[in-house]
Image (cartoon, rainbow, N blue to C red; front, side):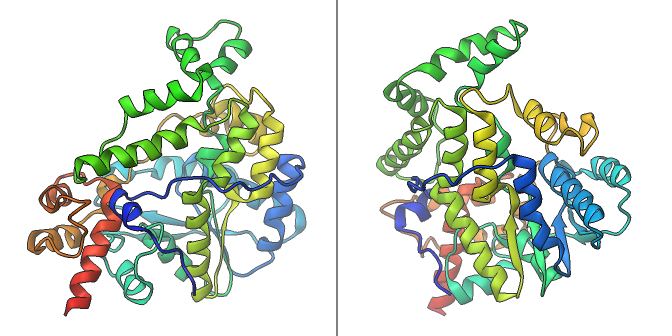
Length: 376
């Protein structure tokens, strides 16, 4: 299996920058395209839907259940990851609301303690077989795919990008909300309309900083991040399509599909599929919608209760990723296995041992672990 090889800067920064200039396919109506996308997968067995209780997974499950009932097919089975040791991931009440609304009673629940750590028992066999892969946090999805052998796993990955805020959104809010917006929205308009050079400068000034990087490397990667952000089109539909052409998203999707093929599983990120992204982009047009909730209501308002589509809370998984496996390795790590021209090993160790390690340090963690294993 040929997988993408991260270059040294991508490993150090924990990100894959850039876009692939892919043409947008012809667009149908979002709901028709959505149904056409789901139908062949619903005919597979087992057909599992990754279901957290968040808006994207809830919409995906609701659409799949509704279509299965219309077509006289077996209902898809939701599969949920439960993290009893990480309170911020709790979504049980939202899950109950959605499942009760849909009349779905059969579900698979997988309990997670430290199994999904980047150095845990799910990830390390893949690392030993393939080396570093992108994305590094593949363990949760891989675990769900083991329950779908011979069938399909549908996920709502890509929903934030397809349905979330766009560069033009502040302007759209003012034009479509008839003045009923907060002063902060007006303050965001100049940035949205500014030329790329100004938006790039703003992104550099307010950038996310990776504390383990050497100073010159941190600046170089920040420039790449800023260039990606400054490239966003003002046209909402084009901005939506840009998310589908990001190399980080496309390569990650292809990687997990390949890992699924090893298990005889078809892996589908429904909201990242080009046909659906193109349909949403076309529907949104230049201005798009006024926000995430308005987008969900417009596209899926008949599938779920309004309170689900408009919820503002979101589960947080930072404390559910790095567990004892990471900390045990970090405590005994001698600083080897990473490029010290790019990375400060002491700062990197401090990050891994902190209460909330930075997610982009995950590839470095796996690189250091692999180097140690191979040196043995």
